[in-house]
Amino acid sequence: MDHPNVRSLHHRPIPRTGGLAMMAGITVAVLFMPLEAWFWLIPALILTGISLLDDWWGLPIGVRFVAHLTVSIWLCAGLLPGAGWLTWFALALPMVWMTNLYNFMDGSDGLAGGMTLFGFGFYGFAAWLADDTVFATANFTVAAAALAFLLFNFHPARVFMGDAGSIPLGFLASAFGLIGWHSGLWSAGFPVLVFSPFIVDATVTLLHRAIRGERVWQAHKSHYYQRLVRMGWSHWKLALAEYGLMFATGLSAVIGQRLGPSQVIVVLAAWVGIYAASMWTIDRRWATQSGCFITPSTCSREREEEE
Image (cartoon, rainbow, N blue to C red; front, top):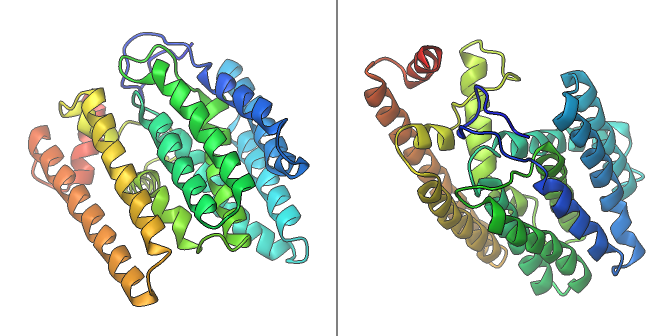
């Protein structure tokens, strides 16, 4: 059961076993795929098992980090056997961050499930356009599992995915992005733009907390999506708004694969502006609603202390 804590936006205990069902469905589907699919499924299942233990009893941060880093290096070494340890480690670090930020962003009904549906759906669409039907099927399988999960997770949620779902899904988001890039299906920036709704929120929030001298690994509810709910947005309104954003970033990423370098720069610059304007607006409204008119970061910290 997921009991409410300082990070939570829900107010009653809710089962967090949805991730087990999702990973079970993905595993069954892989039985009908070529053996190469086990290359990415085995490390994902290892993370599922470790994260299930964390859901039950809580594991030390160091244990979880070592596990995330080990399976990420394992995948990088298998994908690029001749690259060497330095390259494997350099590629594994952003994979570990993606693995964890997916968990950070799993805090509102329908949010992480929606990102999984749209993110892997656009991965699959791009792979299909590149005539790699096997990899497209793998991505569509993950998206299909997310769609089924959303039937039970959209507000009011009856089940959460838990760490046993969010951690392996975050790993697969980065692993599939790397596999697609290595296979020449898309550019290195494609997966970043597809999953940018999660990447931008989590990364900027972490930087804000680090600058304020806070313990970035502790539970909190200062992500932008969490602040929107705390300022009065309903879970369904937030989910639908995020779905629109996810669809837009995914579609622009697919279109960007067929544009020239100068046009891609324009697209990326436009998204940087959109994210910057959106976060600035939320920061200012949060500061105003908090009743203080200093920096939004300080307002966020003071309001959390009051609550």
